[in-house]
Image (tube, rainbow, N blue to C red; front, side, top):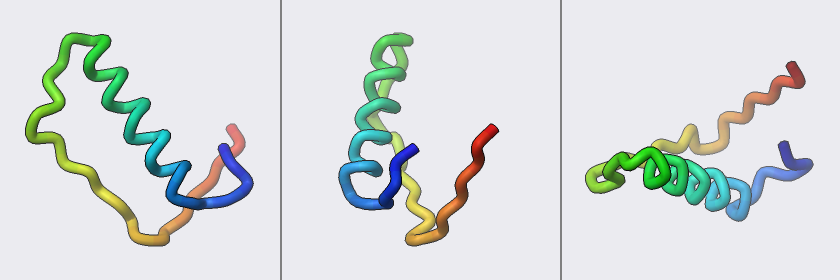
Length: 45
């Protein structure tokens, strides 16, 4: 979670996903990045 929605939050999330796939031995070639273009959802579970 972050107090603000900015580019660094999206970049960090993408980098974390790429690192996770690489650790699992999964290929990142051909992956598609999707953005909701401003839709914001938040949950404190």
